[in-house]
Image (cartoon, rainbow, N blue to C red; front, side, top):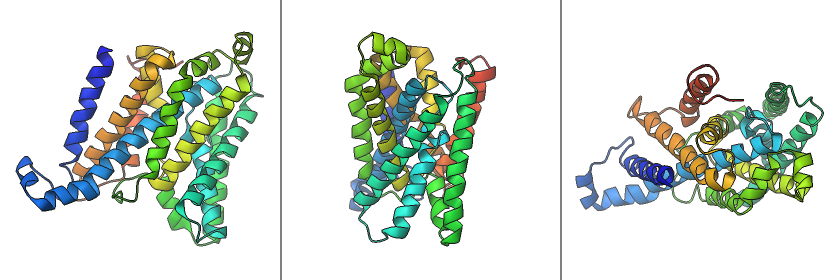
Length: 316
C-alpha cells in the first residue's frame, strides 16, 4: 500500500510538471492568463494523458504477455505484435484509404491479434528449458513481419508512414487526436478483473487446467488485451519499445507475480517511465524535442542490462 501511495504521488508530480514543459515554457504566474489555460487545455493536458495511458497500457500488456509465454524476455514490441499492427495499418491505408479511424484501429488490433497468435503457436514447439530461444524467435518473427511491411511500404511509396509508426512520439498529440488511447487504458484496466486468473496462467497450462482454469479462454482474453493496446498505441503515437519489458520485470521482483497486487504498480511505473522520458525528450534539445521512443530505447536498454548483469533485480 505504501509503495502504491508513493508511486501515485511521484506520478502526480511528473504529471503536473509535464504541463509546464514545452517549446513555450510556462511558470505558475502564466496561469493567470487565458492563453496559458488554452495551451494547457488543447495541448499540454491531452499530451500528459496520452503519455500516462500509453505507458500504463504497454506495461500491463507486457506483463500479461510474459505470463502467457512464461518468459521474462518478451514484450509486444519485440514479439511481432507491434510489427503486425503496423503491417495491418499499412494494408488498411492502401486498400481502405478513406476508412474512419475506428476502422483503422480495429483492423490494426486484429492484425496484432493474428500476429500474437502466430508467435505463441511458434513458441509452443520450443523446448521449455531453453528460455532464451523465445525472445530470439520473437525478434526474428517480428523482424520478418516488419521487413514485409517495409517492403510493401517501399513498393507503394509509403515508407514515410512506416517511419512514423516505428518511432513513437507525442509531439503531435492534441485534443481530439489522442482519445483512442482511453480505450487502450480501459481495456488494460479491465484485466485487473481477471488478474487472479492471469496469475494462475503463469503457472503453466497443466497446472492451470488442474486448478480448474479455462486455459484457452484466459489466454484469448490476454491476447485481446495485448492486441488492442498495441494496435491503438501504434495507430495513435507509434511503437514505443522496452516499456512492456523492463517495467514488469522490475515490479515482479518488488511485488511478486500476484497480479492482483502488482498490476497497479506496473501501471504506475509504466506511466511514470514514459512520462519522465517525455519530459526529458522535451528538455534535452529545447526548444526542439527528440522522439520519446529514442529516450526510452536508451533508458530501457540500460536498465535491462543492469538487471541482467548488475546489482538490480535479476531477470530469470
